[in-house]
Amino acid sequence: MIAWFTIVQIVVAVLAGALAVGVGLAKRPPSDLTLGGAALVGVLLMAQVVVAAFAPAAGNPPTGNPYEFWAYLISALVLPPVSILWALVERSRWSTVVVGVACLAIAVMLYRMLVIWTVQSA
Amino acid sequence: MTGVGVVLVAVYGILALAATGRSTVQILTDFSEAPVAYALSALAAVVYIVATVALLAPGTVWYRVAWITISFELIFVLTVGTLSIVDADLFPRNTVWSYFGLGYLLVPVVLPVLGMLWLSRHRPPAGGGRL
Image (cartoon, rainbow over all chains, first blue to last red; front, side, top):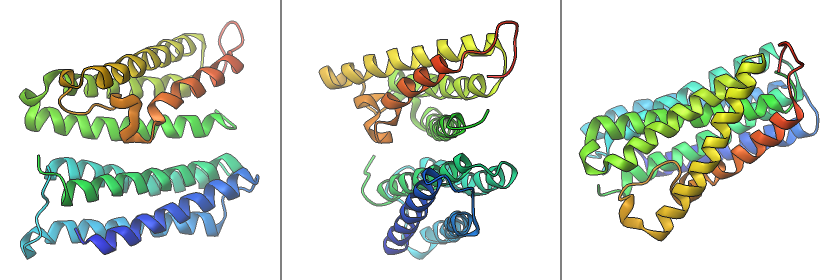
């Protein structure tokens, strides 16, 4: 895991999440902008999979439990496609909020992943 | 399922996903380290999955199941939350409900209250029907 990349990812997820929650509460249905934000979060997560898969071989192994790390990463990966699909099927303002909530949850999961990788000793 | 209920279900679904993944790993890798805490994490995961399904499924039976799981959830988050502060030795490893769900941004303690508010306003019509 690369710390700066993960922090960029968390910032993107928080921004995309706050944007979608805000736009949704302003009673707008899902748009290219809000769904694009969630899609970007999803693409960055895929990049994170590649980084996490190769980092240990490059002398950067997780300090915490690698299985717990991957459980979070795989859970997070599921969220953008599911929430985007949901938003495409049901085009209500609440779907926009759901997309935002998913992005914010991903931000929290990424933070947990960063903690597991870098500062946990157990 | 329409309106703000969709958001409620989404949050339950995300919590179910996160709790399931975490407790599965905890139990498979080092269950002996903190059996009580990890068993509780697994219980929490199951409760969140059932609550998610019960909120989505139509009818009076599922409505009752939703009330039961969400009440259960509130009782547990308050009990485990208090115990984890009063007697830290009891839970050497964190559960979803430790410190009232602080590790999950206190969502676990807020969610059952929102769930109950939503349920009380969306009683299904007698003789079945959608939630």
